[in-house]
Length: 363
Ligand SMILES: *Cc1c(COP(=O)(O)O)cnc(C)c1O
Image (cartoon, rainbow, N blue to C red; front, top):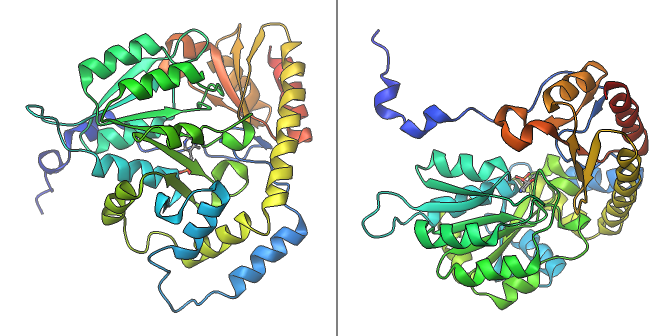
C-alpha cells in the first residue's frame, strides 16, 4: 500500500513543534507543574463524590454551560453574558486564536504578540493555526519591556496580545503603568490578560477589563487545586463571547466537570481560599530559606511557584534534583538567560523541605 504523503497535506508549521508532554516517571516529589498541594479535606472530597453520584449519565451535558457560567459570573462579579467557559484556559486560548485570525490587509496571516519567556501554549497554539508569533523579551527584572512592545505593536499590527500576569515561569506581575500603556497603544487588538495565578497575587486586574474595551481576562481552576477538572474561563464583552461560542464545540465540558466545578466555586470555595493562603505562606518561608543558600537568587513571586537564578547550570541542578527524587521545571534547552534558572512549585511543607534538602546537596 502506498504511504499517505503527510508532508503534502500537513501544515508546514508543525515541523517546528513537538507534542507537549510533561516529564514522565515516578518522582517522590513533583514540583514541576504549578499544581496546588493535595490538601483537600475529607468533607470536600465527600461533597464532590455525592455530586458525581447524582450525574444523569445517559444525557448529553448542558451545551450552554448555564449553571456553571452563572456561578463563575457571581464568583467574579460580572454578568453571565461576559463569561465563556472552556476545557481549561488552553481551550480558550485556542478559540481566541481561531476566531480572531482574520489576516490584516495584504498579509497572509494574522499575528499574535506576546512576551518571552512566558506560557508556551500561546506560541504553540498560534503556530498550529499558521499564525505569526512575535515575542518581545521581558526586561532584566522580568517585567514588560514597554518600549519593545510598543514598537512591536506598531510594526506587527497584531490581532491579539497575550500577557500573563503573574507570568509563568517568572512569577512576576506586570507593572500597572506599563500594562496600561500597552493596552492603550494596542488599539483594535484584543489584549488578553492571563490571570492563571491570580489567587496567589496581591490583587487582580479586572479593573483594566472594566476600563478598556480591548481587554479580556483569562482564569482557570487548574492552579488552585482542580487541574483534574479542566475548567478555564474568559471574561470578555458579550459580543466577543457570542463570536467565540460559534467556534466552541457544543459539548466541550462534560456534565461531571460542569457540576463539580460549580460545587468547587460555591460550597468548597472557603476551603480553596484557605489552601491558597497556606501556599502563599509556604512560598514566603521557602523563598527566605532559598535566599540563604549560596549561589541561589530568588525572584519575588506573586504566584504559587518560585523562579530561581542559579550559579550552576540549570541542566546540572535539574538532573541532580531528579536523581534525588525531586522533579522541578528547567528551561535550559532554550539557552540564553534561561540556562541558569529553574522554576519550582510551592508544595506541602514536607515537599518544600525535601526540595530544599536536595538543592542544598546539589549546590
Ligand atoms: C497553567 C497555566 C494556564 C492554565 O491552563 P489550563 O488549561 O487552564 O490548565 C494558563 N495560563 C498560564 C500562564 C499558565 O501557567
